[in-house]
Image (cartoon, rainbow, N blue to C red; front, side):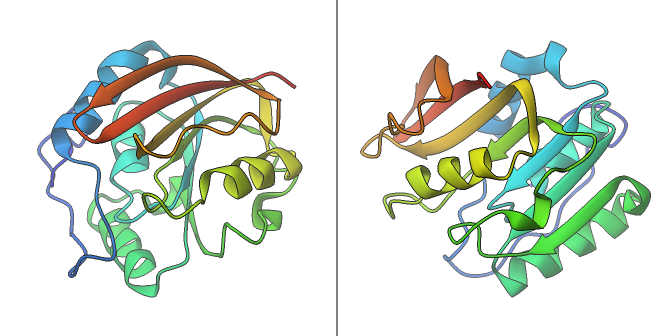
Length: 184
């Protein structure tokens, strides 16, 4: 796993051993950034189910201002911290070990608010609806925030809460990328 573009292009990232974490492939990450290229510079990123942190680190490499990484796994948080240190990004990030399914009070009313969110929950575990609800209830996003959800084809984006509008969806094998707009 490596950084594809920007200031850190080519930088290798530490992976997490085992099968509990399913990292976003370099190719899929490159596709995402090709789609959102103009929306990355000067953003504040929230990376939910962050795993190795590759998505937000890629965004920081491409000009994002700040990123918050959240994951419940101790090994994921350790990998994120190691990757941040090796990329010399300590002053532009915050790493939080947290159970996203319970709530997101750890980022409640964040100032300035996030304007780009990436979430890659474990597939087919019914995490989408509670995560989107907790994201909305946390009041941590700007109006018009772009939320990118990497999820299984078998698990559609829920209709509730009705504050998210699906603006685009792209299929990559067994993965669906959904691009949502926060309308509040």
